[in-house]
Image 1: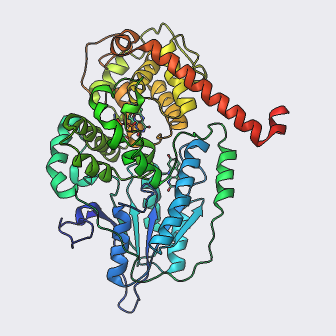
Image 2: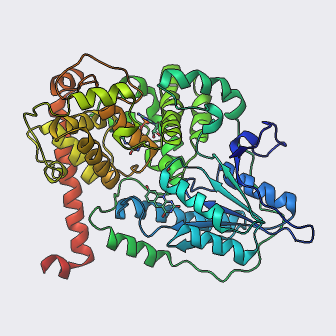
Image 3: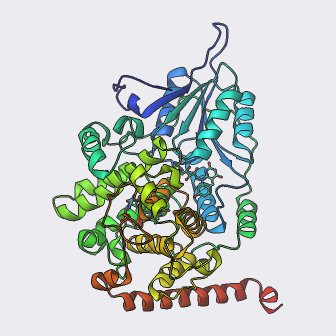
Length: 497
Ligand code: FAD
Ligand code: FO1
């Protein structure tokens, strides 16, 4: 796979290092140049989007029009109403914004992406397809298949619009830990952590389209099919809401909440100390690069908090993408390092005092009120506190039959209930907790072997455990009450029957 070699680029365009050529098209001298299509999937935003900037740039250079296409899969890694509702409501806003401000048409397809996108390219006679980047296997398989299906004349460019330093530029190999990638990323920030150009409507307009998207029925459909995990009300979807969470004057992270990030971010009783950007970052409704640029502007005021935030936002997040990009077994024991696989295998048949089934765990039916609270926070609120995620996953290792099962259950629950699930951060979070990925070996003990251990007593020393349990009880109670009132208002017959 060729990455465009020179790092130079024309002013206002995308650094060439951000772009990989997935397929080089061959056009006969008598063949006209066709339009550019941007197949959007991971970076679902109009603003600060290098893939969109590149697509417009290329269209202007070739004097052809550009369109954006999105493919809604029939099923994507078990996503339910919670995640699909959030995504589609964000996309509905995106369609209005991209069509009104940039006069770029937005097309939505449903079903098999390889087929839909290939058909669309054929129908509009496109010469260039631009896609954004995700290291997930499902997406890579889809792109490989698409490369085979499209005509020889079509070129396909992949743009890393998600990471500040493009994943293949930051490192050419699987990194061991944050300490091995940090220096590589930091060295490249002067080159890549730059401001975005303002995007103007493309020079050539796409002809009239007769496609209308019935968002209401699309949303109603995913809500019905995925009703088992309902939407959350506290997190408003879309680009505008994302910017508000980052820098809103009322409760923005950088404007109002950042100062306690370095001291309070590991206290589950103080969730407001966290940015709460993960839902937006996951669906690409905000760019990590924008968050970093804005955070850097106030570094002189809160240096420690900004540095701690940038470490998570850039180094840890890009380390997770590095792992999934270079380790195809990013979600199984096969992907763990040799030392970790050995120690987990050595201890796989250690006697467990307690074993819970997937169902018992899902229903938060363990003996441990702290674990149950974190599980309920995820199930009902849709976002477990970052510190609790580590304890939560490690206890699954302790209370299930073995590491394979523990990893599978943690990923299943994480992907099903977290609003930010199905993300490289999630796979790596579970792999870190259960398989020691990006961690070191610790003193050997039963079940865990050399994998880092966490326990209730340790949590008690760090924060007010009873306070957290009580807080979650209140939170879940309020969510259930609100839901009952809403259900009553919406369809009284259904409730009574
Ligand atoms: P903040 O602390 O404000 O962080 C800002 C951003 O930095 C986050 O949005 C995220 O993009 C990045 N970040 C923070 N912590 C990490 C980390 N440890 N690794 C990589 N990037 C990080 N994150 C997800 O986005 N999706 C998941 O499904 C997910 N599952 C996890 C499962 C487990 C078992 C563990 C241990 C961690 C998981 N994380 C996941 C990482 C982390 O817990 C969340 O990113 C964080 O809690 C999100 O909240 P925030 O945006 O308010 O965090
Ligand atoms: N992207 C798509 O292009 N089409 C989808 O239907 C789709 C569904 C989806 C559901 C849940 C979710 O968390 C993400 C979803 N995405 C979808 C986005 C996406 O492709 C992923 O966020 C990235 O691949 C993660 O790297």
